[in-house]
Length: 377
Ligand SMILES: *Cc1c(COP(=O)(O)O)cnc(C)c1O
Image (tube, rainbow, N blue to C red):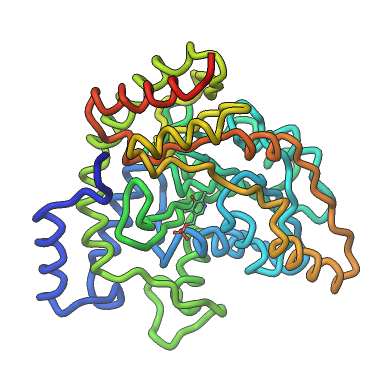
């Protein structure tokens, strides 16, 4: 199956250019700034600020929106730990609302039911590259005065009703970590339409400096989370490769869907006309009662990167311990999470990671046949 990342001399040339320029950091070079403009245009966002990774991108987005100590942030439990730990990093409390069992995505009704007087933000995750119900979440945010953060770490190039994700909510975050569909080994970016929020993100990433301000002019307290020029140089090339690779993933995902959807015992996410482009980071399927058998067959066929996926975060004792430490100190209740759908999907879901969508038609057929034959009839 195809290797990831995919690269050639273009990346090498871009890296050498930065090396030989002697401008290795974004405080002297302009490669990060150029990539920010290019990525903002790609996702149709007003502003982009790059930073070290997708985990801190969520924390910074929350902080920029004014989320802080004791505030509640509603998150789905079926996601990477960063979605919840980001809230903890800013002293806020992640509150879990259940997912839709058909899509694995945060359920807007469950999120609304989890709102309390302490709720400040909702982090919706475009898991697997499938955009969440952004109409429902942006309306909910407006109605209840909540910040909507899109965790788009898996959703480069995804679009909802024709508009790329990331700046449809108040802020959106992406990751460029090794496994992601655009990568520089590590890295992240925050998108927003708001100049004010972009400025706040810039300051958090740049030790409290302000755009155009002095070197020792620290107007707020911020971290140093800057991306290097080397990373941005690779990202510029990877961004240029993305449309073609996304189209290939889309083709193979459609073929897999056509082959697997009719198979009894396999459940795929339903088609949704609102999803006008799928990021295709993971191909997820549910195989109730047959997960071990399918994973064993895939491994035996040399397809050993298929995965049983997440353990849901509302079962993660580290996250719960941190959250209750904060609420106990503040004499606040911690809303006890009950997320039966997340429990259910985490027991019967299989992920095929994105490199498996970069193969030939034959390889994709083999993938489907191996899965299909592992399910007893
Ligand atoms: C990868 C990922 C992150 C974190 O990004 P890093 O760059 O690895 O820190 C956050 N959320 C989701 C859903 C992810 O898949």
